[in-house]
Picture 1: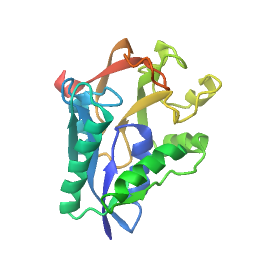
Picture 2: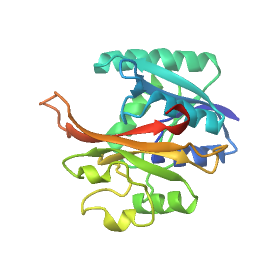
Picture 3: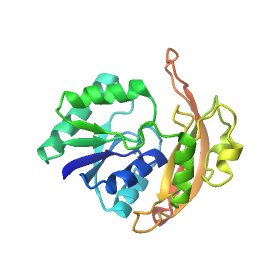
Length: 233
């Protein structure tokens, strides 16, 4: 059985990828790996508070490895910090890295190229799946999640803090991927089949933020919903 690390965002795609990995008899998931903005003490991509990330790891019962990044991290800094994390995990016997990617070819190639430098193997349990089927499977398995970040060019502020439920698919605007695979939205999972117990959350303030990179080829305008862990509020 190969020792593996789950690249954990805290959102629905990584959550259902972990579900499949935990059922794979050839894998032993030993760690969760997440990048954290050290200045803001939040998950880098989603803006989720660090204490909620830790609550997820505790509910799952798998050790969390945090890769700390500065407030503004260049690609060089990101890759340097990730390289150190891979080295640490290799020392612990890890040979496989699991990702929740679904269909973005260039992202998968980037990940595999980085892993190849370390002699690690990539695992993509969701690759090539229908995103509509995945979100329906997510709901059927009784996962529960809320939207914590939304691309302001695709969704309005009202989507932030919204529960992923049976009405979600029907109400998504045309052109928005059901899993947000193109970056339209990101989620936080507060309950899953493998959680010891649900994480109690409160929906906080929704804020608008615009990144300063005017040359970016992707959206730079997002709404973020602040979630608070009730036990810490």
